Length: 112
Image (cartoon, rainbow, N blue to C red; front, side):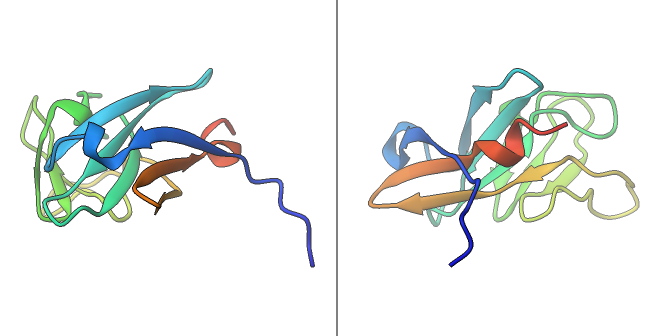
């Protein structure tokens, strides 16, 4: 078995994030938005729209996408890619849901 250097940070219970909402986690290098969809899936993206740096955590979640609150760019929660004619990508981070709690992979989130 290969040892893992992963460190999973307990973000909190799923119920602490409203459906179709987000909460932020601050690391020494960046702020990360953790999103909850209407179907209780969780995703994590850097909290910066690739267009003008808008706070994605303040956007509206619809399906598996979030709309940037500044200029309405649509960002895929799966991979951070902008949709449609818009080009750009918000960095995505590994996140998992276990026993009703959300965990963020901090070994990746803290890396440059």
